[in-house]
Amino acid sequence: MTIHEKNPLYREFYQTQYGRMILGNSLDVLCNYEASSIDLIMTSPPFGLVRQKEYGNVHADGYCDWFRPFAEQFYRILRDTGSLVIDIGGAWNRGVPTRHLYHFKLLIMLCEEYGFHLAEEFYWWNPSKLPTPAEWVTVRRIRVKDAVNMVWWLSKTPWPKASNSRVLQPYSASMLELLEKGYKAKKRPSGHDISEKFSTNNGAAIPPNLIAIPNTESNSFYIRYCQEHGLPVHPARYPAELPEYFIRMLTDKGDLVVDPFGGSCVTGEVCERLERQWQCIELSEEYLKGALGRFKQGVSDKPVSNPQDEKNYYRIPRPGILWNGHEEEHLPLDGGQSRRKR
Image 1 (tube, rainbow, N blue to C red):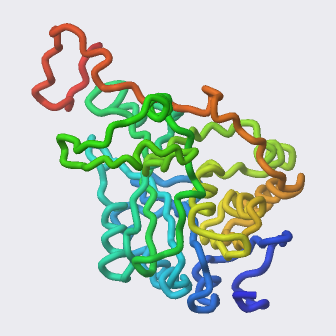
Image 2: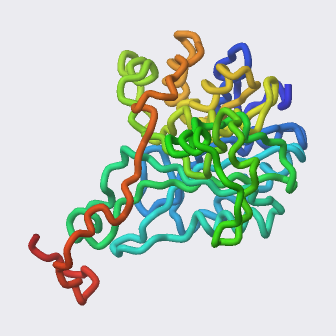
């Protein structure tokens, strides 16, 4: 095992074929990991918010200081080939329609103070996100809805192991048409020299760093299990496709993946299915009791999706679709400070 078997500060809560849940404070557990022993830290920590949530969170103003001991341990336990992936949402400053900078400050701190490298930034777009914050978006109409989380992919060295061939996507209709009709190699006005290799059919496309996954889980076995056993459903679960994306791209079978903010153990469920070793650490025993529902029925492969099924695609309209005519309402001179009648 990577950590000491017996420690009064934490204990093993549940074990599966490939991994285990650990009940305790994650810092206590992390301090007992061997140095350079983890291949991937895949996690969604409590966000830095300006309003307290039931699962516990730190105020955005003090977030970086709260995160420092975790950063130190993350860097220590990661292998040189390993990665740290953090899903983190932004926050609005209280009472005003401006954004807090805590998650950007966290990124800069991790890189400049602790030696991490930003391998790439990703944007998780939730197509099902409600138009929030309502006061600024639907009432005063001075902002658009916040529907994107940042996902920082960090590494201990500039060369973590990775392969985008693990996360390819189907070609678009326009690309399929181009492949069928052929493409003339030429230099674009932008200066990019498109070679004849561009017209080679490689079977699939390299994805962008925008990940579209709706967070609409409402009737899963996990939720039903919690309801049947009178257990709280963790309110801040990321969809399984998000950790699966990075676990596939950044690890091999048998590698060790750790989620220090385990919650309902979505990361562990994905790892179990993909045959990665895993450990999820969680402070709340009630959340771990609910997480058992992810494993009680047995973890099976997901059904194979049909790449041609329209349900597997999410479209973003071009901004100008409704820009017809020239009639425009005058912008509020006070920037929306006072509510106006619709």
